[in-house]
Structures are given as C-alpha cells and as structure tokens.
Length: 585
Image (cartoon, rainbow, N blue to C red; front, side, top):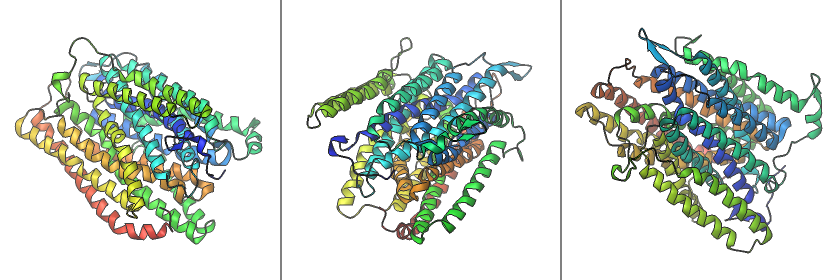
C-alpha cells in the first residue's frame, strides 16, 4: 500500500499519530530487549561463572542471530503475513522468551577449581534466548517499515519522524538500564529479566490498540494467499508452526557458542556460519534482483543503500562494545556513581522510572483520544508535554540517586540519544531550509568519525588505571557515551529512513532486514574484538587493576583508528553515493 498524505487531524505534535503508536511499541520492545542485554554478560559471568571469552561468545552469537533473523521476518511480511500479523506474532514470542529468562535456577559454584552450573536453568536460558531471537526477527524490520509508510514519499518530515521514532527506541533502552539493569543486579536477576517480559507485554497491547492510526498500512498484501493451504495447514499457521519449531535448533546453536562446540579454529561458531550463509543468500538475491528486476535508477539507488548498510555494519561493530568490553571495563576499572553525594545509601531504593514506563504511553492514549474528538484543542499537547516533564524529573532522580552498577550505567547511551534526538531533528530541518542539509552518506561518515573518537576517553582512563593502580572516574565513561551518541544520531535514524526511500517498494521490508543483518555481523565482530581484552580472574582472587588496564587500552585505541579510518573512506565516497541516490534526500 503506497504512502499517502494523511489528513491534518491525524497529526499530533507535527507527526502522524501512527508514528507515536510505533514509538511506544518499539519503546517497550527495546525496554525488554536492552533490559535483558544489559544484564546478560554480567549474569553469565557473575551468576553462572562463565569466563569472559565464553560469555562474549554467547553474547555475540545471540546478538548476531537476533539481528540476522529479521531478514526472514521482513521477507515473510512482504510476501504473505503483512506487518500487523508479523509484529503481533513477534511480540508474543518476545513475551514468552523474556519471561523464560526470569527462571534463573541455582547459582554456580566452584568445586575442585571448576564451575558446577545448573544445567537445567541454562537449557531454559538457551531456549528463551531463541524465542527472543525469533520474536525480534518478526517484529523489528516491520515496525520500522510502518513508520516510513505513514509519510508521503515527498514529505520533508520523514527524517525528523525517524529521529522521533529512534528516540522511542532509546527511551526504552534508557528505562531498561535504569529499571532492569539496576533491579537485576540489586534485587535479583529474575526480577530484572521478569520486568523485561512485562514490558514487552505492554508493548504488544499498545500496538494492537493503535491499529486505527496505521490506516491499513500494516495489513497482509494478499489475504487469499495467506489462507492458501500448505502441507495441510493455512499458510499463515504453517509459518507460525515453522517459527516455533525453529526454537530448538536456535537454542542448540546458542549452547554450542557458549561451550565452544563445533567452532572452527576456536573462533568461528556455528551461529556465525549460519549468518554467513544468510549473508551469501542475500548477496546472491541482491545481485539477481538489481541485475534483472530494476531500472538503472533503481539499481543505483539500491547500490547506494548497500553502501550505507556497510557503513552501519562498521559503526555498530564499534557501538556494540558498549554491551561487551565497556561493561566489563566499567565493572572492574571505573567508579560507578555520577554524583556520589546525592546517592541514596539506605536500603535498596526503587527506580522511579518504572512509573514513567506507564505514564508515557498512558499520556499518549488519553491525548490521542482527546485529539480525535477535538483536533484544534491545545489540551492534548499540554497534557502530553506535562507528563513528559514529569518523566524527566523522575529520570533525573534515578540517574543521580540510585547506586549505579555496570549494567545500569548502560543507560548513558540512551540518555544522550533521547536528549539529542530533538536537537538533531531540529538541526536537519534547519539546515534543509537553508539548502545545507548534509547528504545521507555524509551523515553516515560523520557517524563513523564520532564512533571512533568515542573510544579515546576510555583509552585515556585505562592508561590512568595502568599508571596508578586505582579506579578511574566514571566521568570518562560519560564523555565516551556523549561522543558515541552524537555519531549514532548522525548515522542510524537517517539510515533507517534511507531504507524506506532507496529500496524498491516491493522489497522494502527485506532490505530493512538486510540493514539488521549488518547489525548481526557487527554484534559478532564486536564480540571477537572484545575478546582482545578478555580477562580470566581465578575464583577467589582479586583483579590486578594495573595489569588488566593495558589490555583495555590496546582494544580502545584499536577501535579508535578503525572508526577514523573508515570515516575518511566514507567521506571520500559520499559525493558518488549522493549522485547514485538520484535526488533522494
């Protein structure tokens, strides 16, 4: 269904109401996903006593697969399911997977120098992670595609709309760290994982309620084909059944990654081999499609899009260190509290941001209904903005008053993204009015440059620790996140927008899946790089800070030069890529 201009009454704060439905659905989905991810490596190393390398191997395989499967989810939605059914089914799988992670079993213990783990709990964990992988595969590419369809092709609000949508992603990530990351490490792992599951349930409810604002853009392309029988079942139910059956082999792949089984050369896991197979299939399809099914203009636009996707791969290889080496570095070598004098030390304080998670979508629900009845009334906007101000107060309280942990401090990335999103949305619009808006390739090159520069503060901090033997200040981490997120605001939202603009319309969900396939490889590559700073601390012994710090410094300087080098290459290619886009801004 092509994108068409919606009537003015469908707008809310300058954007279609459907964008806010996607905003809050994605907010809850990212809350559940990042809430679990903020805890996963620490949960593996502290509770189940995995070593750094095994924990990173599992984190890389999980992260890679979770962004690899969206290629298939996008294809199934394009061909048969439609985006509403794909997102709903993905949401159900995510709820089940996150709730399964709440079963933690017994903590591992050391006997005769070897860890003895609760294997039953680990099997549940592998299967739960597999459910999450499949759920993201059905939900993620399709919710992003819906956003693009809510704007007319020539609507200048498209980039700022994706920046707004991206703020929803990172608002969820922000709350995830402050709620799940904090609760998991202080109250108990099962409570952190359980909160993530409840969050996804709320996101699914929001999406189903908001269908009226999506105007049919998410419906199946051919309902008759979806009802056609395949192997005795309607095609729709056959797709669901195959997805559920895929949980077992995916769970086995995760087990193999965690245990180093069947790994080629000790590094190339079966999960990575599967991703390489998917990549090969996508590249063969891409060559066939652009060579035989595209006009010359479409072909050049698709090639330009693939170049932007490759830039995203490099960027997220750097970015995903935030859930790997940055987490272990923070846990071991940095102080934790931003303003120590304001931290609540008595008892175990509760994160007030948990209330914000309910207030934000509830405010939109009420404001949208009020706006439907009286589009000219200022009351809905006043209500929505007032609740936003209250949420900001609750957020600031948690940032300074909660005793922070390595997991909860991952909130810094999302905090800066949410803070920067309105600034960048306004900046691109302001530059566009003056004819000075950088092209999408130039913005992506800027993103790579800032990503490389973000590692310099942490490299300096590691060198300080090596020289003094004392923990470095957490403010080095704050600075690193600020620089990194400036880069992300340059690259990621405009990249998502580019997929919906440059891809041939009939394969836009598949190309959105290819965008996430690049992220899949970045997750795996990030884990491989992170292992350069892996430290195996013998049970019962204290970590030698001065000896551990140089390994981190080496990794961080390497990431710096990779980012800067790739940014220079991207700047050189930007003029050619802009011409290949044939007028797409």
